[in-house]
Length: 107
Ligand code: FES
Image (cartoon, rainbow, N blue to C red):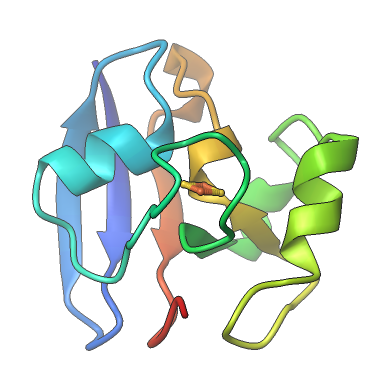
């Protein structure tokens, strides 16, 4: 289990423990974190699981693949350099303490 801090659209900071191997989207949504739609269920096909990775962490994640990069151009909220799709972030122990924020709209 890896501890991640999720900042909801309203600014609430929620600590969640996510099973290693799960996606950030799966883990956060299953624990009721607000601000995630994930309409496609994690297939990298909807861009409604958009999150902003804390700048201190963005360089520690594997870079987005081609499909994620393409989908990131379709996010509803502002796309920023630290934008990622949370269904494409695979949780592993090295991400202990990761901080991500979810935008105020996903569609
Ligand atoms: S859940 Fe659809 S792109 Fe992430």
